[in-house]
Image (cartoon, rainbow, N blue to C red; front, top):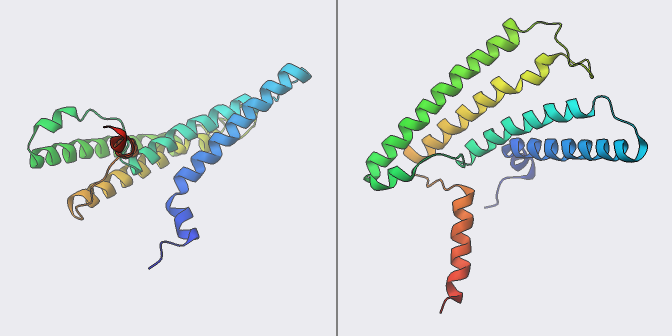
Length: 182
């Protein structure tokens, strides 16, 4: 049985790909801006503003990716002292509070972007309506909520052990280092 096809794989990691693209473009844009300023005494008028908006989008989508991978920073040390069922209930309750916060913030940001934002607010250098830059707020918080709920479904009903990438990497390093210890 083969794995998912390349198209399905691409779309299952779309947030990561968008983050990679945003990072590459805004870093390149800032680099070009520095080179142009230092060597040609020219500044791209819209460069820094666009790079700033791209960085904000990158940060919010990065939070979505972290939620998808169950890699968000959280204080979970105290849960190690609880029995497994109490640990699972406590983490699930904390995740539900997180989802409630996300959905509330989704509602607030949606209301701001679509009902309260002045239609004439535009980016100073690009002329693009600010609504398009602020759209990341409701989108990111909805996506985070979906990923948190999906991860909890996998943990609670499918009994999938979700391990964040940092823990996986540490375990791999320990496994590699262990045979060398005499």
